[in-house]
Each structure stands twice: as structure tokens, then as C-alpha cells.
Length: 107
Image (cartoon, rainbow, N blue to C red; front, top):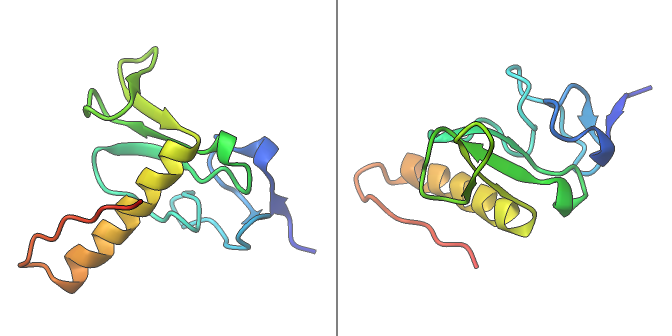
């Protein structure tokens, strides 16, 4: 039987199959649906089916979100999910067209 990672476990590094998307974590412990997001992302959580639990924490003051108690910026909820999508699509665009410098926007 597969152990499922549920929303109430969000924020501790994925260690089992996500109950929402069914993906296993990456070897580094990142959420399988997010993979490794680019710098300045420090860590992130997809929320595992509960968008209120989704977040992105950035290294230092990235200019995105609000500073947390450690001085790193953080966004959560719907804003985090939207930015996670934008970052994943941006990474795909950069790989497909490395010389075009395409900037991705997500509505």
C-alpha cells in the first residue's frame, strides 16, 4: 500500500506520494509536481490539494511577497500557486528557447 502525503502534512518536505497529484517527491524531497524551482526560491509547497497550504519562500528580499521572521520573502495561497505555475512554465520556455529570453506570464 502506498503512503499518501496529505494537506495536513504540508510544509515539512514531501516524503510520500502526494494525495492530490499522485506524484512521488523528487530525490531532494521537493514536491513532485513542482520539482526544483529556480533561485531565488528557497522552498515551496504545492499544498497537496489545499491551496491555502501552498507557499513559496524566497532567499532574502526577492521583491516578491512579504518578509517572514527570518527576513526571507514569502507568498502563500492562490498567489503562491500562480507563481509556482509561472516559474515552471518559465523554466520550460528557457529550456526550449534558451536564446530568446522569453518572459512567461500566468493569468
